[in-house]
Image (cartoon, rainbow, N blue to C red; front, side, top):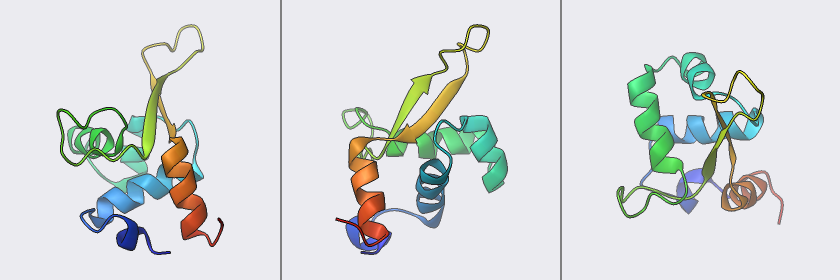
Length: 98
């Protein structure tokens, strides 16, 4: 299955963000933005569009990633990204799984 077949309204940058989160669980938004060569404000727009639970404020919200607070003391202001259950299922389908 192709990522775009599942979500044809997504951009290349949306797909790269999704794959970056899939390949780097618990990556910080700033690190992934830097890896993708995107400025942080633009990246946050993409991130929130892929996040779950934002559909009331963003029609593009797909529930593919989750944003978590870092549990490490001293780093609690840092956010971490990982795939949601829906995103994990899509990633498995893309890779030829169930």
